Image (cartoon, rainbow, N blue to C red; front, side):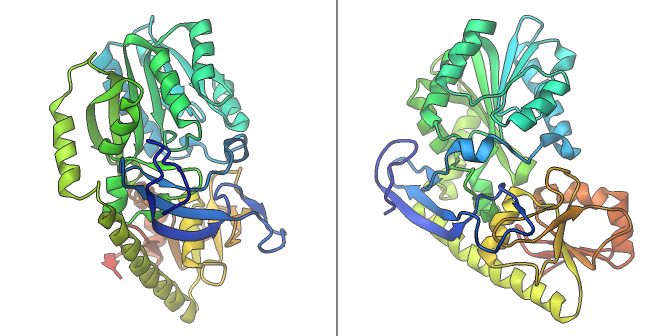
Length: 416
């Protein structure tokens, strides 16, 4: 057993299922001249709670260390703004949002999601802990508070703006060190008929895709409908509707209200039954995931070693947080992947921590023999890029590590 209390139920029946060894904080990029192995490393272990089925990591890096300054922005791809535009339209139509209604987005980043509510005329407020990213939203005209959301923050929002018709959280609900305070704050912030809409990477998708690289220190919890419901029900709330979205390799979108205030839709029983069938509430499922990760490592490392033996250059396409987990877990460094290329200027000139692969600016006309696509969840967008189509036409290849190791070139894709 891991020496921890479950982040959801507080029980001490949390069993280790995956140990990715000690790793640095994935988003704390380092100077390229920093001496090797001087950045702090922390345990990265995944546990399964036998009491409530919550899957979680056991070590917590203080949130102030991870999120006060942050190198990720939502608006750097075309996929996310389009996704949030469609989601906002569904929410506005479903709950009749208008000019008198307040929408609060927790972990609002650069305001990409809140910008999509402009056509509906509602009031918006972002709450974003990272000051550098919050400023991007503020500069874009999106009202944003730079602070961590919790129960005290919710009370301050109510005092200044009143209650929210809709509270949203995308890509942040698994980050929450103050998990129960946040849920209490959401419950208090909502109007009597208000709805909390949460999008989070779906643990079921991680299992089916062997997407272990979604595990990093920022992601404290990994949700199924069952475990998410176990958390919310402790605070008088329930999921009344839910479905899966393809974003980020598979995310759950759950619509939540105070218990009994909205009719529970058939989607809930259907998803619960599917989770039982697929064993998402059983520890054996996650023990098998650990074995699948090992098999993936052997295939990917062997492929990269083959490229190196043939004198082929391989660069990483992007330097996302999940990429640090994959590279450090598999022992992949500059000998196999010489550099990463990025469009995000906040990352350029630094290096991925641990493996110390340097990050350069992506430039047209400058390319390797192959790219290792660390941001594999955006592969469809990348392959439609005219520059990447030209790259493949000239003999270049994209190596996609998850869910299966694929090599994609002008002639199509082949599985390794």
